[in-house]
Image (cartoon, rainbow, N blue to C red; front, side, top):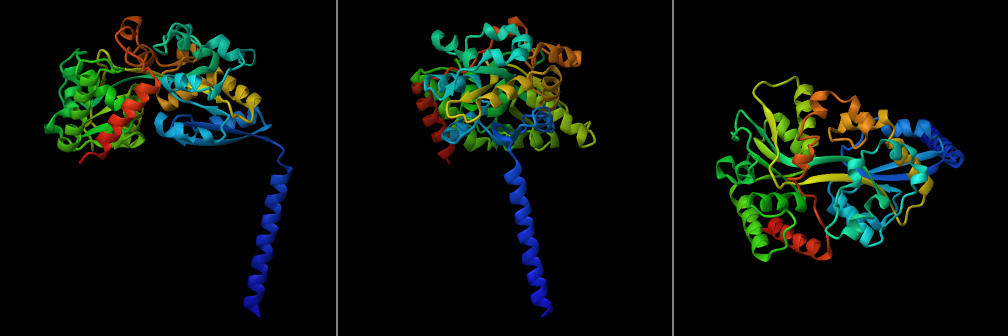
Length: 370
């Protein structure tokens, strides 16, 4: 009989809990706002602060690792997504995102660095000119090599792609290098190393890049990933890796969090002809909460919020007021905040149906190789 009472009490307790949860849910009249962002790409308390500032919203926050893993999921409903500029161009052409209402974004109007109005985001200027009608820069970065200077030697002052990227294709570094599991970064690095444009569509150049990446996989055994590479570099497991400039800052922070390690000296170097990339906030055409999306994007441009996100994530901020809050050693670093001269040597990724098809084919072939 005691057991029966325990079971009955437990069932009643569960029933009361379920009823209470139902009551809370039923009384929660907040509007759902679904945000889809990169992993480890927002300060830990930003969502809480947004919900405090806008108590009418309940944020559902989801993450992805690359533009290419995000894209197939866009049949799901999201209110704000944060892809890179080349993916934004693709989504504009495919009518997968909708125009933003600048009248609802006063902080963006006030604080967005005007240089982003001068960027050619797509090979087709007509598409490029539309980008800021559909998207707002969130954070940006350059793509370079991060390496442990105690294990790897890079000629001082070099910007030569072959000298810098050769580390990633050297059999002497077998098992000690990292490659982003992202087709544009990895294929772009191979093309840049070979002396070609990171947007090349030349068949012979792409074949060279393909064979280089297949040989690398077979003979250098790279660790593929994204967020995991930061931990592997910070722990000393890897000696060198492709890295977004923001990831270099995160790696240095993680070494400090681990108590510091004088045996690891992580440096970052940027090759000529490499990529610089802008991740942008935009609104899918199937968005269910447009006003909430505008409130969220504008909130992210509050200078203090933009500064906190820049500090936490490590990437470069397009918010002029937030940049002024940074340590001058960071804001003055030309790898993180390139000068006009450095920018002129870099490329953004372009996109088209043919580029996406060809590059996907190459990356799938690399990943399937022995």
